[in-house]
Length: 419
Image (cartoon, rainbow, N blue to C red; front, side):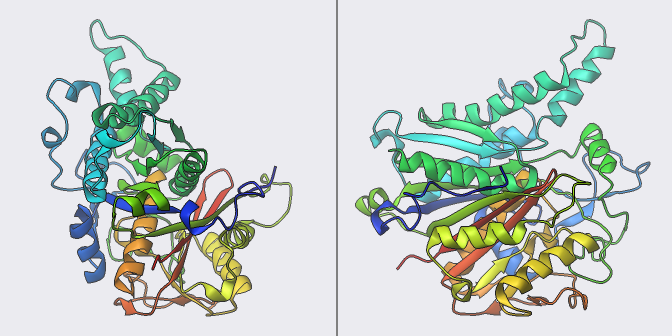
């Protein structure tokens, strides 16, 4: 199967059936909380810096986007601290902010009406590393890598569900950087099946020696030691990505339910599609453009109605060129403003796309496109209108968010302002 969209009966849902975002929570390298992060984004504040969570002096890549000033004990009890890792603790903090931001009284919802669907790709590394270390200690018990990741997926989503009494559908999607969009799409399906509310999105972290080794093995990391030059998507000087940690969780509700309780709405999750690139060596072109086209069809929109694109922005010359060509083919060369605020955070694995969703929603709210920092202009072979330097005020009604995950995953989501 090479592409996925919603069933034929689902596209162009009536307004009362729309899935809308009523709450946002964020943990990012340049801000812990929605307000702190968004203010930093509009200032163009770079959160990429030298690794501090472990000694990276012997590694060829030593820069990352770390979430600073995060105090575990503020979000999780001392009894549970040894049973959780950093990404679970970050997720609990982000979920709490999103639910509080939505202003919803979860106890008033029917039983099983609210659930949690998140995305992850690397969150189990830290726990797995602890278990491997225990193998070498006296009396240590070995846990396989498979068990470590299975444990993480269950605990991360389960802790959010338990803390907030969310007994409805739950699950975790693993499609790397595309997961932040795929999880929200799955949450939308659950709402269409009768649910009232879903906590969804992605938070990820693998800034530990074992996780860092895995990132290095992928051969995509920039080895620059200058935070302002390490991650330059769409630039002629692009030479790899910088990995970060964090992400965003959203509260997704049926529009009718949100309206009934007088909720503030950031925007509608109006369209989505996923495609899959051909396996390496079998020929065929990347299919990111088709994902964007199908997502627009799902939203009942045409390309000329898109006001801004939040790009995947790989930081690799070939991948950037392919994305720019896809955008030029869909909108025409320089046809729509494009931005990549992830230049301030690094690529956050499964948390990256959901953080872009949060950025797009706030852009719609504030009528401003956030900048792509450090890149002065796109390369000649990337014919896109890249927003650089400073925010660009614009009338915004529709945003397209793109994401690509390792292994050939592509995802696209359309967000629409709600009157």
